[in-house]
Figure 1 (cartoon, rainbow, N blue to C red):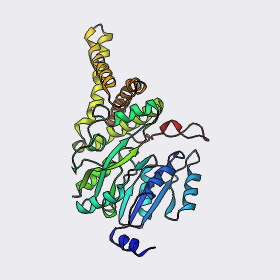
Figure 2 (cartoon, rainbow, N blue to C red):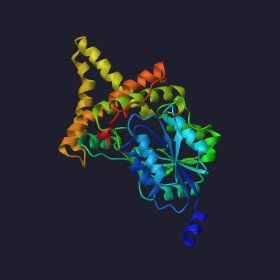
Figure 3 (tube, rainbow, N blue to C red):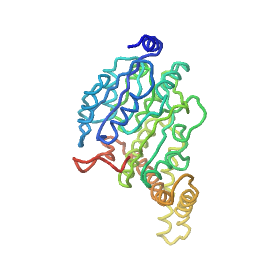
Length: 350
């Protein structure tokens, strides 16, 4: 190693990048490349927590590890994200942990700037923007919804905003000591684990910080069925987590379930002969039509797709929320990235 690089490495803390992996044969190589291709002066290790994938993901992971000694493979036979993350943290060598998902790609400078912000702010957890993108017309519509306050809410990591203390963080750059202090991720949680972890860190006096200069490209679901499954699962877990910790939940979490309740009540009135029962559904659909017609940066096909994507996201999430709030989410697993064909991956999700 050149002397200049050695000196630089001594000034920059080493980091452990942990990536939970399941059924991601089409995305894993790009995710790992986006990490190892960063111009980070310190040492990097990448830990891939491999679940029981039904495609060729694990072979892709093995090939990556064979070509770069910085990559280590960890077995996660249960396949749960939280279990894989906790095992990766336990086996990590360094004091700073960076979580990346196999269907996401950090932008240039993410590691360098993220670690700098973590240390400057003396934070326990730092996160940035989930920069949703798509390739197909439907996926671009979903990506637009992710970045709109009218699509998936007003969280800073979706829509951006000024840097500052945050409710939660997307993926995250952590002090390993903070993860150990709160016992890591709650392995009983399938979705919403990042929010739950942030709440527990904050309860111990830790600082959770948002920085808009940090961006990670996220590839959302690319088909209607996968999107509906994802948001139903997400809604179920959000309802359960809200019931467990109502004081820590944002009021915006209640908007989709209230929408579902209003439309259901309206249809009940309509069935009873009261014409005004149509108003909740009519007003909502007119709002969706307005958003689709005025959405900037979308093609005509994507705007038409938005007419389908937005109600799918809102109603699947809202219905799921009531299910989780009243009946808990235990046993609910998100299978929206699982292919029904063992020899093929979700090509539409990229």
